[in-house]
Length: 210
Image 1 (cartoon, helix red, strand yellow):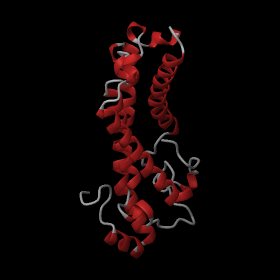
Image 2 (image 1 turned 180 degrees about the vertical axis):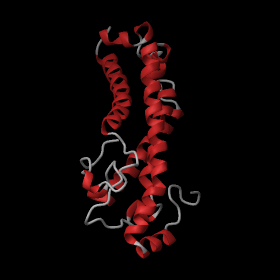
Image 3 (image 1 turned 90 degrees about the vertical axis):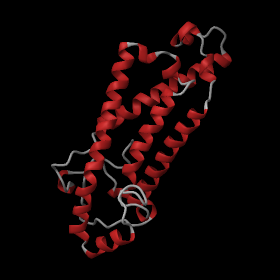
């Protein structure tokens, strides 16, 4: 969820009326799951090396042993997160400085049709719901700190997780709504080059589906 480039200048924003992805919001969406993973990793580390670790208080009955479970859903969640990260990274490499959280059109803008953009026209946007799904699966899996600590039985835990879910869901909707806007901007900018690209790459997000 970290942008590879700084926010675009106002002069480069091509669709000011289209909501961008807030840098602060993106940081929060990354901060919450990363924090839960770090707590889980630290508890496992402390349990292996320290007897009667004071950090065990983060778990019911001061027992971190349930965190050692690795059910199939854990691996499915990891696969989703890794797949999303791989897609995003390949998009960052292909787009270079043109990858921003805002809808931009630079003076030297060029149409990127290589890498993941040779498969679908907006590959980075499908990575977002895949990442979201992966985190939800990891949190819901037996052995996760969120599940085993009974965090969701507490009001603060419910508020934090619900806020995160709402922000991330809104981001996914926002990104999907940008697809049509970006296609129109690129068509107006590149004309026949974009039309030829659309002919070769007819799908926006999912190959063979949409």
